[in-house]
Length: 65
Image (cartoon, rainbow, N blue to C red; front, top):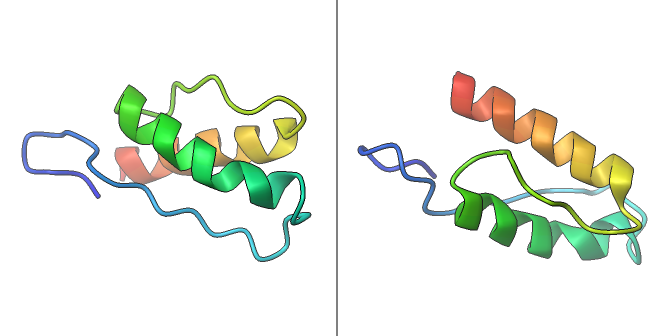
């Protein structure tokens, strides 16, 4: 969710095909990082590199569109 002033106030991530104990477990933390950073420029979660990169790409696309 992006507010009128451009601030990211919420981020919901879905990962039905993620490995539950790795990528799936990282989604909540990644969503928190997106809101805190107010962008796709996040640190990510160690051990979930592919998921982190996918989230960065998706958030970048969503914010650009």
